[in-house]
Amino acid sequence: MTHTHIPGPWSIFADEHSACELHIGSKTLPYVATVFDSEPGHITARQLATAQLIARAPDMLAALREIVRLIESPNDTRADILAVCDRVLGGL
Image 1: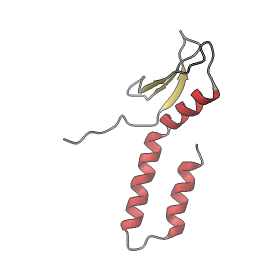
Image 2: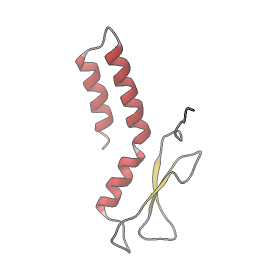
Image 3: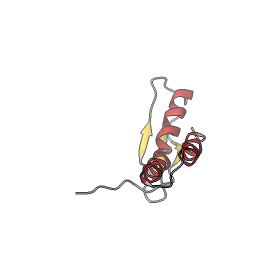
Image 4: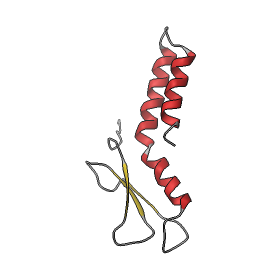
């Protein structure tokens, strides 16, 4: 059985009922994930960084697939692969 993920892009938004929850969602599913932290009452830098990493998952998966395609291509170049890496890592 093949499973597919919830299509991106995924966005980060704060919970309107809680001062310490960040949610990651998409247009098709509002709640893909929720990120909590051990410091109640506010959103921490670590919590935000974690949410940003989760939200970038669809982009990172697409980049990995593109890198595999480039490696398997007889015309791949190191510069093409590095450009894909730079594109996806630039957003983290």
